[in-house]
Image 1 (tube, chains in turn orange, red):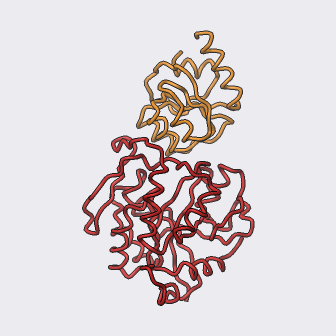
Image 2 (spheres, rainbow over the protein chains, first blue to last red):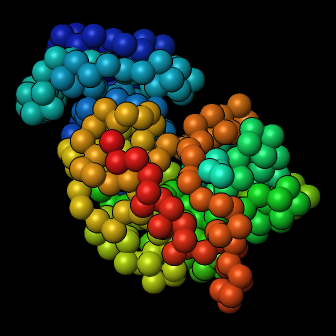
Image 3 (cartoon, rainbow over the protein chains, first blue to last red):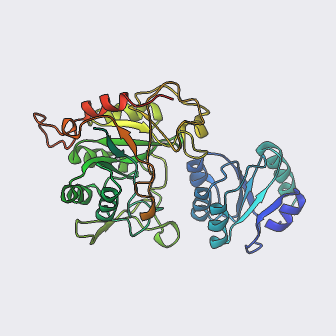
Length: 112
Length: 245
């Protein structure tokens, strides 16, 4: 599964679309960025409500190709700019972290 | 006569701060903008405070030394000291409590500290944009043991604030609460309130100072020993008189 196919499968809006459509190997769901830094793995999509620029720095550190913002949180312009510069996708959904995590888990488990 | 204070400023030591932001530049801009009590509060480090002390002396500004600490709950708290030595000792202890995530200056930003002539004298190895292994409840006592005060930062902001991380303002030994805007959009529960610039770029310096109803002379320790630049007890009393809504 790639970032774009994930966005399609979960009906996510692509907020920042300038990225290389790389493979998604897993997901990490957390709103505590220090926890993400410590535990997210390369290739994970970050599922979070932390919609601000610092989340991009964390994605850079942890080699995450995409950030999925839940609950339709607004995404600030400076976050979009930073993500563009780093080639990190920002996706957004109206669903909760719980719901999208469950769906993504099932998709990845099924080998989609 | 009230003075203008600005207790939240970042220099080139903060990864998100502009490389232009030397303590000397911050100090001269703040003075030009009427600030007479100024604090340097880089993320999780006070290593630019020696240069800041020299710059404040040259400009005739009263300095406070410290940092903007990130606790485990991922919220920001200003830790302020009247003594440079105390700030540096606290900073050294704090650095050991940060996780060892190396900074990558090309992607995350420079973390350099300078001398009073603005020459770079060192670079911080650990990434400073992280949380220390310290709970919020333990921060106040740690800072107090070095003679400092704590002010939770931008409590009304949607990221890295008490309200964003904990849901509301919690009780603690806060000398004041810093808001981005007054009147505050969140329930500040009767604590005295300040604003501050949270400057990361030259144009931010002095954009949101606050008035402190005090004669500057009374803040300067006369009989206080140990090299303090500001009498923290007098400062705390003055902050206590700030508006609470």
